[in-house]
Image 1 (cartoon, one colour):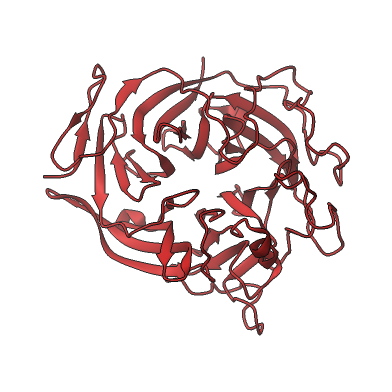
Image 2 (cartoon, helix red, strand yellow):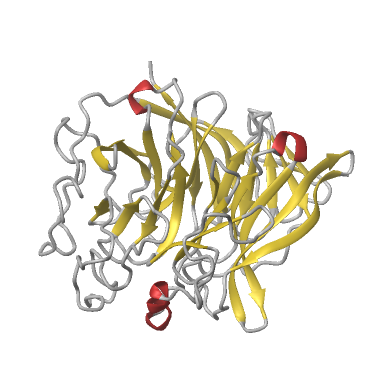
Length: 434
């Protein structure tokens, strides 16, 4: 019998069927989730409310007030003149603690649970089925089963890609695997699982894995990874022979993609697209097919970038913010010749995770904007971009840590919450009110 959990709209607890031992109960709900503290030490945001247009939504003091932006509009952009009123309802609550979500063509949601299991969630949230065949993962700390992406030809191939914290003899690291998602009367399973890419070297901690997966319009796969956090590893974000702190661009088979900037350079990994990154947990293509990322910076240094081939984004040589210990990072500088400035940065931080480019019509005020999940800001961060500059920022307070954001085929916005203390997550549906 498939590992299946089925609900009704009136049920307060789910009926656990055969094979679902340990799966948390679920219930239909229209209520909001509760505030959750930031796990990395930054105080949670107070639930910034939208205020008058033209004024920045962020009004708290900066963590490092002596640091100044390199250009106008690099931080604390004004709010737009037209901001929609957004309502949200819970599609499903009480799921295992999730990390990522993809929406299938039929409207079901494929979600990754941090502890290592994939689940298929019905469009209305009333049924959840576990997908068998996932690999063993490290799941402590920030590790786990991480991002998931559908192959560009998923409709015909049923192929998916996912990243995970892979246990290794000499530590662990971010790896990428692919498999075919199969479903029959015996349930859902992964067939032909193959690990196609490994971030190297391995390292023995449980921090800063990245990791987002985004296919470009040529069919190559961007893979974002972290620099593993520790002072002795962060410097390797600058080393082209190391897999720490990079954006990689690979083929669906895991090889270096054509056109990568360091192909053929001695001592450089040919899979590297850009480098000098800290911990990238947000990535999406814009309407022109260009990659944008948001990475966790230090305290007061989260940043939006548009990674370009071969460019160095500075970490840890330059950065906004300071170490969580209170000490400056390196020489404490924010600019240096040859190193790229972020398009935008946040001080205090938002704790970014999950990102989508909104090209739907149901919320016209957001057309062409980036929607970013905020773990610290406990809501949705909306960035309105023109060219390569952020023109406006708005916030949608949800009183919950937002781990991932996706746009449904119906044009609605779906957000994955994270409640680490309870070990559970919810899936929210966001729509324009009225």
